[in-house]
Amino acid sequence: MTSMNHNATSKTNNLSEKGAGDTVIVTGASGSIGAEVVKSLLQKNFSVIMACRDLEKGNTVRNEILKEFKGKENVVSLEKLDMSSFSSIRQFVDKISNKNIQLYGLMNNAGTINRGFQLTNDGVEETIAVNYLGIVLLTEVLLPMLDNGARITNVISMTTNPKRITKDMFEYSPKKYRQLRNYGQSKTALLLYTAMLSEKTKGKIHVNAADPGIVDTNILKLDRWFDPLADLLFRPLVKSPGKGAIPLVNALLAEETGKIFLGNSFKSISGDYVKHPLRDWFLENSLKHSHQAAEETK
Image (cartoon, rainbow, N blue to C red; front, side):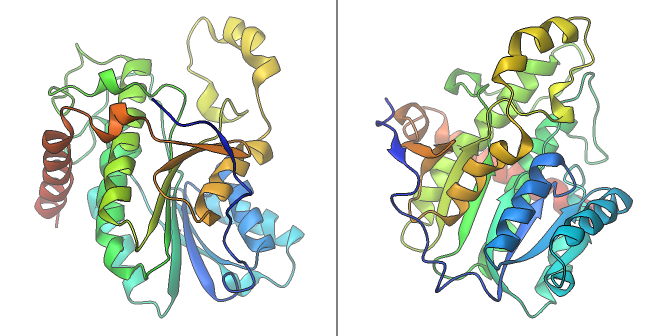
């Protein structure tokens, strides 16, 4: 059972002490929600590393942001990061580790929802790679760079369900692939990982999940025949990217840990995740699959 919702503004970070000079990595920063997160962090005087798969698109978005935030050119950098590639993740971390920066937070915002089955070069189904295993690898190798009080936010969705965690989730087959099922499984896995990581780092790092809700982004298009019908039914519920970014930023700045942020409120992660019967198997295999594949691509 989840606890009752709390107002997200009840406990937020003291930005008079944090902000200036502190750096946040935002993955998927060239997307509509990612760009809004970057803007919000700049308003709060953070430095931002925009981690993007497509540098050309990322540079275009960065330039658009800087039209609004003139004079911030030196605090908004752009780095190549393809979350579907373990070697790209390693290369990104190597670059970050060579920079003399104070790393305050990691916003795991990048995500995908593929229509068809596709394996990455590492042999992982791409939805699971981008939305989950890549995040595990990136987070785990960045942990030593995060000081006490640092923040990690993982972006989930309303498709999470603890029953989606099964022992065949790391077995990839075109016959088993289902667009929404794999997407929901990847986001469920990310929420379970969030619950375990918040326990592991409690007292040192604040780890939360954030659900932006239904947001008007490209990921909404499933390229299916029912897209027009879904658009008609869900359009009244669809938020702007700016509103979708609110819970992400709230989760990053909050003094809470182990919570799910929705809009301007938050709740505890359900005991169905905290005490999941497969949690030990799940964590062991998550680390094994991400690290082993990454080592093989070195």
